Length: 364
Image (tube, rainbow, N blue to C red; front, side):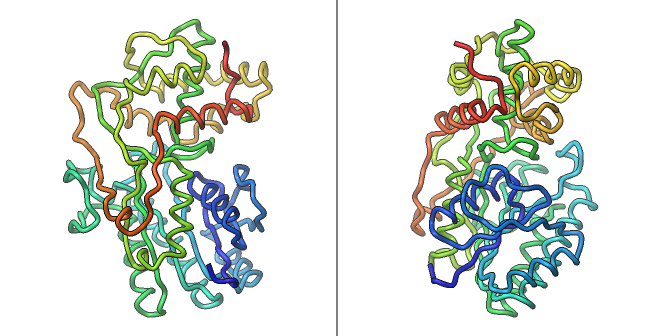
């Protein structure tokens, strides 16, 4: 890292943004976090800026106060209510593209920006519209389908050619972390489901459908990858898939989750979690009051992640959906070789959520 390096992390209240801020702080960087909400999961020494990417005036204030920014980690995303249908919605696609372009142009014009790390995901391989190639590799041709990734990527690569920037694009798969109220994070959903089932005197049954083998990535690994990408020559102008390094199935994982949460297992019980949580907001408010939880509103706890849970658990599927597995050979050969145990990752973050009074404590 150069002594003058200063990283701006946009979307810092989100899952990856918070982890990236923590990782850069631990690595000794000067860190500026920017988001609409204060990043409560950031524990390092940061300068926070309230930022609305739809408002040029807030971007102007940011660059005026921090003209010495050299690196950008862009993790912000706009998602429509209901999550899944928004992935192909032109309004969502164009808004995400415009937010990124607006910020990038201003940073190029008014700061010392020289490197950008952009977050995508495995939707880049078209899994939302057709079966993915297995494994999905970064070298495969772009799958053309409605997606804001391509708007942002084309904007970034063009800017890199014109202004001499370097960039890295990371494609993590099913990120696991602590943040509540975000669009795609399963530990708060799993923990809330377990707590409500226990309140009802019912077992912690797997609510999904057919078996579906997955990969996941601990958010701490993603944060560390962002720091690596900012420094590594092998990461310059490259795209990398990112996972923990193993596969898993939900039914195999479920007993470990039950143990971490202190709840009793039960037989499978297919359940629409969106509908389930919709009718239990008052029950959650009671739990929150009884245990002095920091998030008394179920909506604020879940964000849109319960929609994501229905997808990940294959709710309603009688046969296994097409696999969505990616190769991580490229990033390992480039020098980033970190791995995590997925079972330990889920259990770790569930315990953190309990210790921070986001979820009720474990019942022995």
